[in-house]
Structures are given as structure tokens and as C-alpha cells.
Length: 461
Image 1: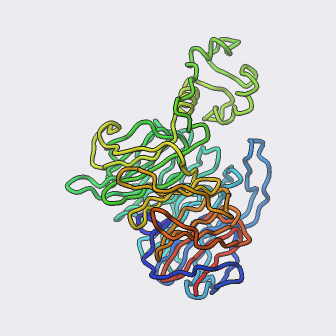
Image 2: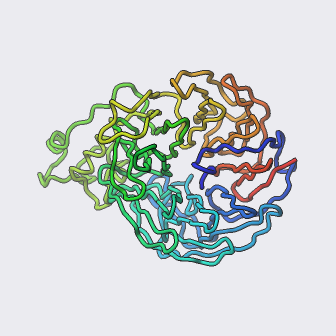
Image 3: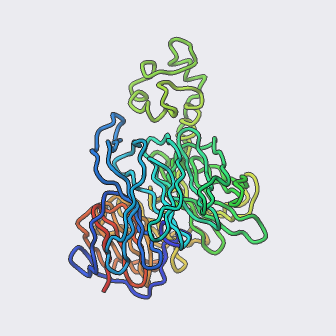
């Protein structure tokens, strides 16, 4: 799956190249169509998705674009040579709007070792044999996500599970991995959009828990049935990273602009807002009734896109402005609201926007925009060291990965930094890849598989 087994981002490789780049330690380099999905390796094959063709156009919705046409593909490459073994086109019955740092091929594939499963928001989920033979296809959507979809599927036992959080009608779906038929579906009316990939935790003497970060709360479901088991309050809205498991504890974080203040922003109630702005007293708010500031962001408030605000829209807006960025250490196994009973510690500052946490050799790593790297004690949340990745003071979408005593971090502009893994980390090398990078690398058998804007590289000595 995305970032390897359990999404942990840790490889058992005993060595990796410490210098690499477009002309250094390149074992092979293969051009790829556009997309941000990360390489997933099964045996001697690598799987990715990509988009080809179409024109990017302004959609009139802030920084959003729409891919006007084009094709979507699942791509299989030979791990040894980089040769494309097969490429399968998916149906595309609609065109999803997405923000400029997203793509129509952002979710990463998942596999059980015998089949590969891909989610493409403009269609749904498709399953292939490792030889490229299509096994089944299940349409999903359309989705109401103002930034485009970004959640990757996971495989657990005989299920393919996908989080479909959006501004209206959020849900989780579990499909039979052999047939694509729905096994269970859990509605999530209490949350709005997210871009998260979930995690299954096997709890001793209890139900297996599907951990799902979501807007305003973290929730656990019975992984086999979809029954809601527990939740925590006080989480950020619009989360993007996946949870990780270490020594029986789940670590999950959410960050969004405006969520770092210690005191939540005070927002008027719906009744107070109507009294101020509802000129025709119809219990709705239209763009011509609100002030200029609200008018500029009206499309983000109007969750169902009907051109007016109702109480549901405003209540979620109030929740969004009250949400706090936070990193949580959670002991699984609870029931009901576990906010007071099962959160071991929390931290609200120095948190990433998109990159998921990494725990390697007993140290928790977080990389924040601006190239700020923080190490913590995962048992207590105490900070070991915080500093900047000199030469890579950039935005980060790629999540950190680790192998051979090193942590690899790659910025949006394609600057890779290797640090020596330790509580008091040190920069070992800074390497320029000459292309933007939003995907997360995969490390296996001493090689680094890294997707840039236009290529998949295999680096090795």
C-alpha cells in the first residue's frame, strides 16, 4: 500500500545510496504520465497510476483546475529494468475538479500480493491481476470534494477498504476483494472532506479496528463490519495523512491553516448570522447577502453547491474555525467517546500539512512546510530536536521514509535530504532531482524508487 506495509514507511534494506540525482546512481529512469500516486512494489513489479492528455483550465473556483478530457491509466513496470510491462485504461465518465497540487491520479494502489487495486475518483475502484488482466470494476461517486479526492485504498484480509470523505454524504466502503461487491458501508454524516488513508489495528482480545482520521475527530470502526467503535474529539479539519502504529499505540495528526491558535476563533451562531445578513428572512444566505470576505470564500462554505447557505453549512463552518491542529497518541481498544480516557498525549505545534508521521528506531519524525524537521519521543511527546533542512526550505507533500539508519525527505521542488536517523539528527546529504516531487518514495533491497513530475527513477549503487 501507500508507504509500504501498514503505511509505516520503514524498509529493512541494509544499505541505500547516499548520493543520487538525475545523473548519479541512476539504475534506470522511465518516463511516466502525470500523477502523484506513489510506487507500490509487489514481487518483481511496480504499480502506479497516471493521467494523460487533456488541458488544464481555470474552473473559476480559487486555485482549482479541471482536467478537460484525457485518459487515466494503471501502469505496471518491471522492477529490475523499469520497462513498462502493461498499461490499462480506466473508464472516465466524469471530470473531477481538483486543486493544483492534486491530480486525477493521486491515490496509490494497494495489493494483497496476487491482485492490485486502484482508485480513480473519476470512475471508482478497479482490480487487476499482476499480469494486467482486469478482475472487476466498481463505479463510485460522483464525489463532492472541492480539492479533488486523495484517499488511497487499503487491503485487509478479504476486503478492499476506501475512505470517501467529502463535503456531503461522507462514507467508508468495504468491497469483497475477489468480486468488487459491497460488503459493508459506514455513513459519516458528522465529518466533511478529508484525504486520508486508513489503518487497521489488530487489538488483542477485541475487534480489529479501522482507524480513520476525519474532519473534527478520529474514529475507529470494526474492520470486518463497519460498526462504529470509538471516536476522539478536538481534531483538525480536512486531514490528509495516514495514522501509524508503534508498540501498540496509534499516532495520527491533522493540520490546516488557522488551526494553530491556542484559543479557537469565536464564530456567531446561525441565528446570530441570519439576524445580521438574511435580508429577505428566508432562512438562507446567498452571496449577495453576505460581506465581501465571506463572498470570496462562499464556494467553500456552500457544501452542497446549491448557491446558498443553510444551517448545516454554517454549523460545519463554525466547527472548522474551532478545530485545532493536533498530533495524538491514542491507545486503541476503547468504546464510545475516548477523548478523556485513551489519548496518552497530544501536541499542537510544529505539525506537517500533508506528510504522514514516521517512527524509526524509536524516534518520531515530523517534517513541516519550510523544511522544519522535528524529532520526538513517541512515548511522551517530548521534543528531541527541531531544525531546518538547510537547502530544502520548501513545501512538503512527500512523506518521510527510512532505511539503513537514514531518513529520506523530499520537497515539492524536488530537493531530497538524507539525515542520519537519531534523536539529535544530522543532515548527511542534500540532492537536487531537477523535477517537482509530490509522491512518496519506496525503498526496497538497497534501491530507492522515486517518482518525480515526469519520471520514475530507480537509484542504487
